[in-house]
Length: 564
Image (cartoon, rainbow, N blue to C red; front, side, top):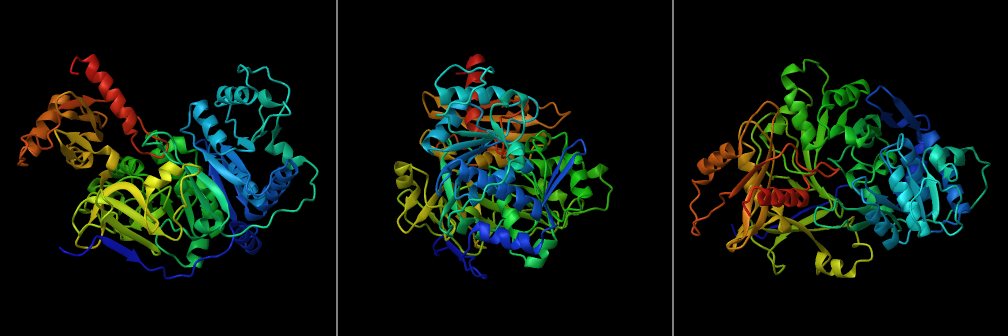
């Protein structure tokens, strides 16, 4: 093949050149009694917000923020689990002209949380203290950092120099501070909201941190109004639909503002429930009870559903399941027919939003591992070498993205922005892959995941794909560990399906049988050197394996066993 590795897809609908608040107000006025947000608890709890309720509460909270001194462009941090109150707070910040700084629940060290707050120069912090005392210790540590003194649960006073602290639910331990229920009971003051424009910044997301410390990614009204998380659909289909999506609100694909603006009812649970694995069918029952038409589900959840397929006899099926976050294989397609009519795989990132979509999969069958389809309308993709030169089709390199709703750069990180962009505003995704003969993007891994063994560059995903075909393997992560002679060696870390006793020697033998067929000039090929069995692999909140933690744990185990 001699064609360049370049793909583009023209946008077929006009861009929406309006603010999020304009779109929200228009939809709210047209459908005031529509249930736009539905929170479901595993215990049967059901809480809802209609457009009218959401607009009333968000507007009142926004006025409160303005009276507290919030000005256009002020950064306000928002932290907590998925709740209706969280959405009220986010919309209120935007109405007041502020910029929402999303702090994910994977930020467990208060010093990291404080660093994000400080870098963004946040003027206020809105926090959900959680049920019971889940986040109280972290909150008291944070307050101590504000006041430069030791943490204590005995704080009763409010320091006039404290940033504005507002809690999204009542807590007897935080009675000195304002909370959202109390604010909504206050006498409403008349204030003037600032003028907003489509290019105004409204959200800052923090990345999953898989490449180190979280990076801060900002997006505008224009970005949010024009991004698509799936195939383009007519407005009437969107309004009639109901989507289940329990991704963290602070994550790009989990942002509730997308649902609020587009008018499609969002059903959600606490994000931490799905990742447990044991609650898959309880969540599915909620999806069924709410008569959802589609769902955004992570690959690990699809695997949980497939495990229940033989026992599932109900006729209820979704119109479509959308999945993203990591590649899927043939095993995941077994949800088709039993749980959904269609399976749609999307590829995206915090910086780019959605990048490409694989054509809907309608039947169980073979799919190419790593195939993420073609760019969504309005997006360009090219594959480049280490010097930034575009490669030919079929050649592996780094994927670069360009689109009208691509982020403008990492917040206050000039050095990182210099590395992240090529000339022409091409964003370097950090993903490696190629364009195949069907003009599909095929993801092969991350540049920083590449293992360098004896000068040979090895992509962990090629090894992981083969090991995942071994019966009884549930999850696998291949990482590079230090080696004095070869620089790095390959270590396989795996988890088995319940009831499967697969030893490291079993996996080693399987690899010998499969990797032995590959001839290699260096005499090493891709055969791993170490094999470690884990009870579970460390995961990020978004469902991705935390390879940095896996590598650290693997090195510790190998040292303990005297292998390093």
